View 1: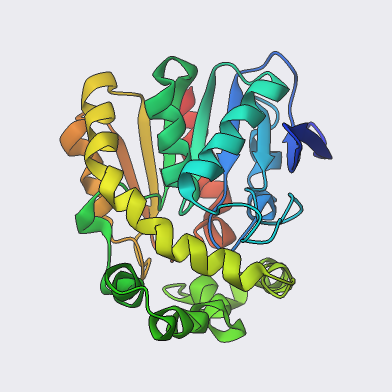
View 2 (view 1 turned 135 degrees about the horizontal axis):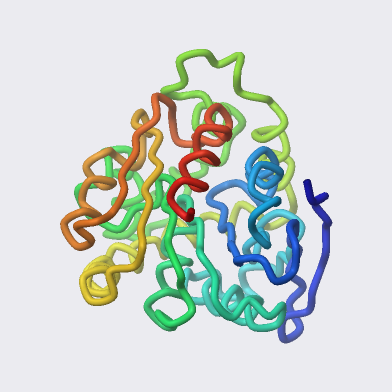
Length: 283
């Protein structure tokens, strides 16, 4: 088993932190985390795949150990997250790779696929949405902010950055919450408590509408290129519903869609099952 190493690299003046494991020369696998997490969310998955794949899991800009410039110094949009991660893959030599996307990692990774379909060998989506029917009513407060960028609507979204909400994201829909380690949400809370982190996240809530606007473009990519596609979905996710996973088969008929009896952060309870599915899928 390959040990995980922890590195920083300079991406055009932007420091990106990443986890790396596996043998150089093995098939490449890029792991992209979601809100409000970091590459730490892959801590249980990486060791189970490192014997077969060269794995890299960066922290997105503004998250984890990567640079976190103030929101008045860096425009926190999903286009810019993708810009940095695209250059990151080029800097580290990830020229062709499978990509595992989760939550915010999905619109980031799907942008990379649309821009450079020749670089993508396969896509694994773990609760990473690209269809309107996948969005639950849990998005309604954020939708209200899209429709009216008032200070009151922005302020209302601070409730999504609290301790209770973070814990709820990890535990909702989990049959036995004692199976969820507190390490993940405690670390997320630490990062969310850093100076300026709240405004970064509120800016990304606002810009998430750009992802919904791109859904037709993502779907066109799926129909045109029909990438090898695996969906591994926590079926009790309060944000991204099972119909969003099933919808991938509309554009990629051979997509492999698998549901697990857990919530949004499916790796917290089903890392072994998901690793097995990935190994079966990638062969």
